[in-house]
Amino acid sequence: MRFVLGFLLALAASGPASASSFVKPLGQIILDDQVNPVTGGGPRTIAPGEKFAIACGCLSGERDVRVVLMTAENPDEKPLGFKRLLVTEEHLENGAVRVRVPETPSLANHTFDVRVYVVGPKSVRACDAGRVKIG
Picture (cartoon, rainbow, N blue to C red):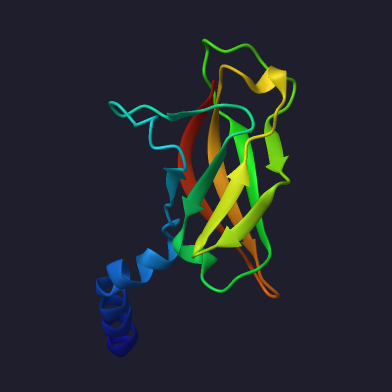
């Protein structure tokens, strides 16, 4: 019994090292147009049809990557009628996934959380890339 209790205490002490496997990786949105800098801590503003890149650590060597725009819960914006939008124009280049914002008028003046999903043969990994506002 003492051996089992000692083993459990040793296992609990090593908890923070194994907890990192549960932390979701974070990515970064990179604008192709550097004229639009980020000011303050707000989301980056991107025009419909504009391209941007996302750098996430989970992209290394993968080919099946999907980018999803999820509507941010913002009371100042009217509902769109959907919560998630799969971006269909994306490609991998230099360790980042490059996407084009859909040219849909209803997306204008709405804020989205950008999420990258990497689909592997045995698992799916996700990366939170940040927020964008389609202007």
